[in-house]
Length: 359
Ligand code: GLY
Image 1 (cartoon, rainbow, N blue to C red):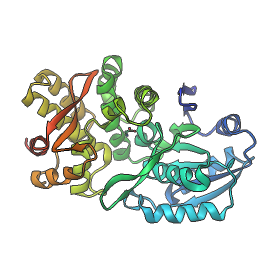
Image 2: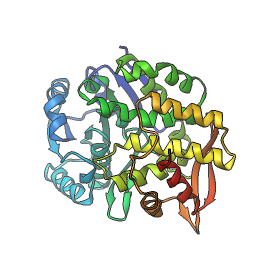
Image 3: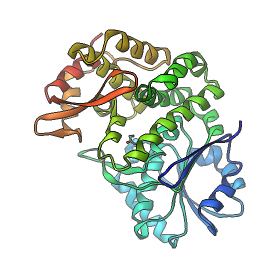
Image 4: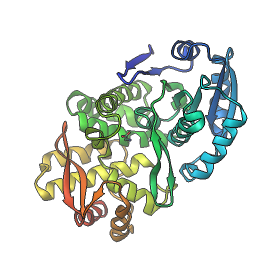
């Protein structure tokens, strides 16, 4: 597969690559003279792909910094330990921090890179579909705190995103599928050919075909990149990328971060918003059915598991960052490609929760 490259006006490229071949040259081109790299990863990814990365970067002195795996470790404690390790390795401001893993690794490593010496160069090497299409692009970094998810962090753009598709081979099927939740979101935002291609490729994606994933990831990154280029600091349009996340975050918090994957929770959130749109007259039943059918065809859930309390979901949405004076801003859509923010009374979140639960 030839590399697919997207050059962002934010000053970096996103490269979808077959594997690691070419990464060393790319690093030299965007960070000339780097002789060391501080690679942040977790033990499983290092065991699976560390040797291949090290072989490609043999001319660069790699120092491995391992963090524990899982959303539960995207915390201030892990960040503190990582910052201490980074400082112990005595970097100067030319030494890049390379995030090698999924979204948790990327968010943690990026936040640490943004703070150590007031900013070390940062490179993303995402190893999951979810991280390739979402977390690695656009510069959102940070950690979870008891008050909520991603509430402490920084916008800190990487200098390069290199997505090696070979790492998808070792990704559990459910993890690969979960990335499709964010891809659905991007394709609804874009509408048009991106959504049509996703619909047509649903069987190939469900079967795990690499070429279909490469195309879906490329489409999805293009959608996200265009939005973050126009609105890197989420002053406006970027908030559209929260489609499905109001309920999605609540689903994750109520069911527990291990029990549901992020992309699955987002898929449930998107379907609930579509159903709310039908109830409020924003969305036609035809569009809502199309979206729900796509989510189901991709093997993603359209509802929370039976027995989940709508009240608990509603309460969990109380910590949502989009809340202001009793109103919430909800990302809704009328058609694919026609996505907007709608200001609704907070009570509407109760209706959204009910729709995520009901058959
Ligand atoms: N994940 C949404 C954003 O990057 O804005």
